[in-house]
Image 1 (cartoon, rainbow, N blue to C red):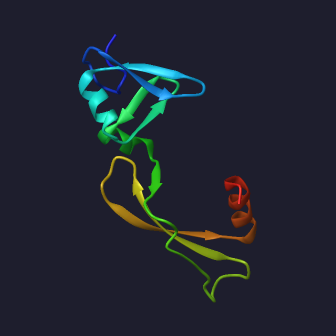
Image 2: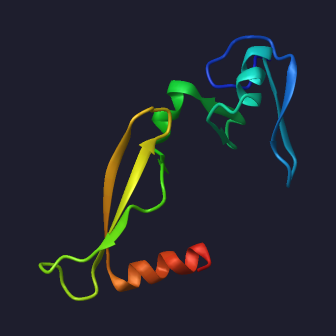
Length: 118
C-alpha cells in the first residue's frame, strides 16, 4: 500500500495523526511526514482516506481567509439592511491572496453570526 498522500507512490514509513477525536491516523512516506510536521497546508478526504496537499489543494475549491475582515460597509445604492463584508482570501494551494466582497442581508449576517457562535 503506498503513502496515503494523494498521488504519492512511495512506501509509507511513518504514521501521521489526522485527528485526535475520533482518532484518525494514516500511513505516509518520510518526505511527506516531514512536510506535514513542518506545517505544510493539507486537508483530509475521509472518503478516500487520502491527505491532499501541495498543488492538489487547488482542486478542493476551498478558500482560506488570510486576515481579519478588512471592513464592513454599506452602500447607498443597496437596499436597506444590506452590508458588504470585505475579506482577503487565498485559494488553498495558492500563494496569492485576493479581495472578496460578500453582500449580506441582515438575515444572512445573523445566520452566519449564529453559526459562528457570536
